[in-house]
Image (cartoon, rainbow, N blue to C red):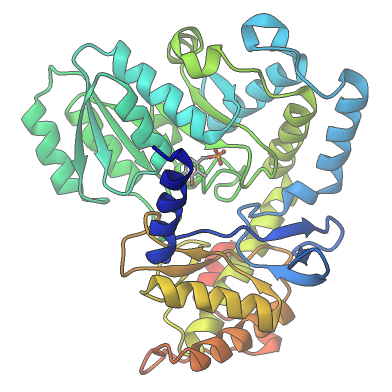
Length: 432
Ligand SMILES: *Cc1c(COP(=O)(O)O)cnc(C)c1O
């Protein structure tokens, strides 16, 4: 047995399927984000613009967030010193949990080392604690939720994406007596579509089920205080467990759940992936808390409005140029390519020719045939950045002979409308 060859073969298979992933070696520039330096190789360093960051509101470079991290590191040092049970519970972590419970209007919150771990730990623990539990899982749920479900002893059934009728059918089959957990996301990050949260909560009440919702791509970004889509829609109190990340809208690292005290205490006490791993360091907790707090305030509302504005402008401008933007009601701008190889070529060309960094989204993240570019405009992308992006994508589309949309809905795209009062209906809604 030549062990080495097994690994080489595994990698070759990915390369044959054009699924082999290459990481870009980047240095973000905190003072000039979304600009970054890209090391093509040892010899050359080039300036690029990042168009695929999940640091949606650029909180990772916010001066107050940076100083919170520096100050906490200077005061408390850089590590946390252990698991939460063994000296890892530092005061900034306790404060962060209070801030998060308040954000979601829940009795308590619990912080984990990542959003991925939060989903794994919580869903598997709830699935095991509820007797004979049935987990009803949306077809497009994130890998971390699927891992949580797999790890629990609960039975799993999958409902078609955002399909209330199918969910109801499965709930009815299980009957009101059986323990049930509905697991879903508020905003699905690859398509940018949004769940009917209130209606799912209605079904949960009717069939006596618990609800678990991943708000990872919405916390900080939606709602008057950044509580997510559920806050925006006024349904936060109707969801039993809300899960979020500190690494996307809040720009730092870590994940959490917010729920009633009994659920939080049970997960804290039973979940191995919480108990046996070192806690987040105080500097990160302090930075995250600062980001959450700032986004509850007025400047949060302003950042959210600016974020929506740049996202809507990007969508309109790309659509007007005939690029196949996949329609959705959120800040995510997916552009369909439909082929793994072309998707990779398109992103390589964007980087080589136009200094634009967008990661290709291929199988298994999305289905084969729906490979895409996933563009995430932020509040610091200027109108000039957007114009550059459109021109670059048009060039790439022509060079690779990718299809344009036959009759693009022509939307007015004037500088005046950007700088002055906005004329797009979506804009107005976002700004209100
Ligand atoms: C990114 C992501 C997570 C994981 O969050 P991390 O903090 O990055 O580990 C969980 N759920 C969804 C839907 C995600 O996209």
